[in-house]
Length: 268
Image 1 (cartoon, rainbow, N blue to C red):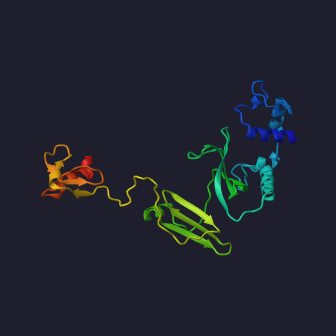
Image 2: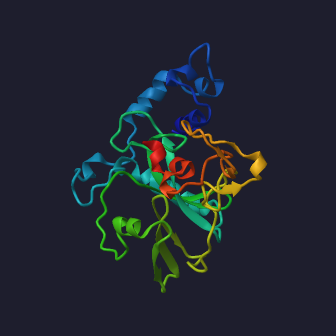
């Protein structure tokens, strides 16, 4: 069995498209083929059980465990994770994908992950990158009775609004705020305040003055032809934002070329 487990670990590092390629003549891996035959490996893999299937609760039961068949292995791994490294002061909880493209009810698809198909797990990781514990998180419905703002209420108030709760006994702060989407975070290191205004975009072309058009009067002798199609006049006004000459002198403000080109009229 130790040889079988060692081969499984080796396969997770030296990845090949098909399992039998580790024993094939053109892609033979001596570390695998010299220690166990292909037929023996596949026989153990097909008959291996980590738990008693007779004790498994059926799907829909309140105590149903979707990972019942491998639960002893996961429990042992988490126990050894705690023993093999000292606990760190700063840790974070985040999701991680275990790549898998086979057929299984627990498989999920996350579009923005580098590995989009697989099992999603929540990991308790430190600053060093070491995983102290991991918990499987599949597709399930969790009914809660919290007193946070609902998603639609946060959207109505606009980006930047937040709500929070503090557990004084355990010194844990939980905050939910509205950014491009709802974001929730829990921490026992950092508090909520103070809050600061930040610049979200790093685009060099971003206009921090929030002004799209700004007309500037030039010298009369440098008057140019109005760039609006169909206008025969000349203008001494130049838009400093888009560098376009447009008429701004008009008896009616909403009839000037500058007003026309910088409003929704230009889209009709």
